[in-house]
Length: 263
Image (spheres, rainbow, N blue to C red):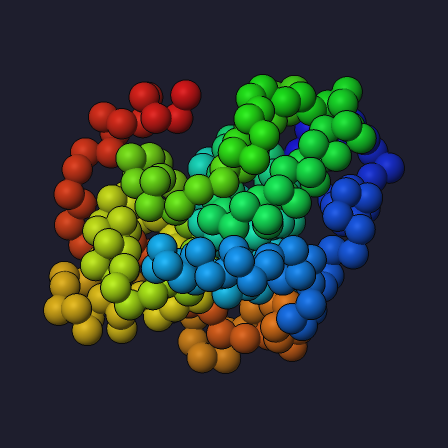
């Protein structure tokens, strides 16, 4: 339990997230994250070779994903959620994992980001004795911290903009669709992840990279067989999500960057 949960005592993570987001468990194609995006935003994204396909990990699915057999959240310090949607998962991770020093959520859709921004500010407003805003630019970035200095960052932007500091990640949630023309850029992006980093993806990254005839840089977790199911908004019974460990050659010395990019 994090310091904030210990101090609030009566509140569990579920109660806190419900007080902030309302209905945390949303299923189907009419969730808040679906309905906030208008046709014009989807058309603009298509022009930029982006895909705004949407879905969420349900709370039980997120917790299963972060258990010891999968992404091993208890052994992580820095987590990236690339395609965080309206921010439910990054808030839950921040609340439930005291060992994680920094949770970083990136969202391309400005409409979804705006909802996430509202929810994070609501969290701080409700628990202002335990949380504070450390940086804020409307529609662009919000950073908050707890009394221990742990951070939650949410950013409206392109996941590829995080290339300089993705080498710091212990866990990467990558539950998004990527258009084919960006596959090479995606490969180069994950090449920058450090060896041993654990990755969760909607796409089968190994098959994708193999078809490009590139060196293998991910290895599927042994536990992640076809019957390894994660509960999601589009399949409450569970669907197969891919879990990887970054392997192979590392292009750059990530230790050089660590002291600079995490500040």
